[in-house]
Amino acid sequence: MVTAQRITVVLLCGLLLLVGVTADAAAQSEPAWVSYERGQQAFRAGEFGEAVRAFRRAIEHGGPYPEAEAGIGEVYLIEGSLSLAERQFRRAIQQRGALSVPEDEYRLWYRLAEVYRLQENLRAYELSLLEIVENDERFVADEYSGERDGYRRVIREDGLDRLLVLYRQRDDFARRAHALLGEHYLRIGNYTRALEHLLFANLKVLTEIIELERERDPRYEFSAVGELLDRVEPQREWREYLAATGIYRSIYYLGSALYGDDPSLATPWAIWGIVAEREVAGEWALRAQEQIADPELEPLIDY
Image (cartoon, rainbow, N blue to C red; front, top):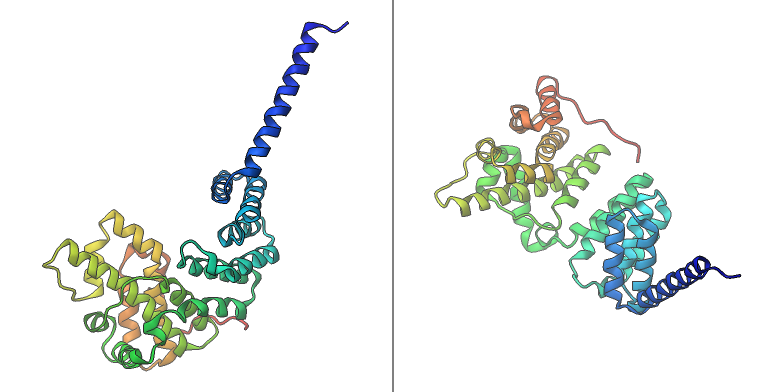
């Protein structure tokens, strides 16, 4: 005899099955961008399996969909599946013409470079970052060759303060790639190339601070990097920017690149001194103090 309780259970199971089928059908028919957003939400919630399923639906319904390909790559990267992450980011880059925001191509190259760094594939890491800086016109265009020569001359002869008086560059997509390449070349002993990239990285960050301070206070005139940092460090929003850009690290490595390129110069000590006196610079202040006391080349890595 069928009891009322068993009937209720059967009806409830049927209802849940129907709801599940309906929800699955709705997911299968939803627009690609909705599936992509569901994937993003699932990724942020740590629901990586659901994120991959949603990204794949987006690709199926709206392909090519490089953002979704990259989303799958982020899941593989978190899970430590580096070869699969590499495949996904490369696929997304191959589809870059379909990006809704073309500038997101740089983000894809940064993520691919991170995969190569974790794989310890230094050549591929270098090439990925070079793909970014090759789009930095002031770094590659012949019309700016005289300006680049000026950077190198001024930093050697007069130091970082004078460089910022004479030259400016706003922060942009290439700044982080320049910083990473500068450190990379420094660690393999290519001091000239390290210096070229670290000059750009530092110019971009410090120019951004100078120009925004001038917008905030039109009477402000830049005179020295140390004075500029004294001015902005007490402001929370600037402290966050300084931390995000790693400016103390970049200034420290700029001094190291100059020292490696020409140990007879006096300017590396002045540049290290900017960092050494700043408690907020933490580890980089301590390392700068050590270099001032007893300078040596940065440890090299096998390449």
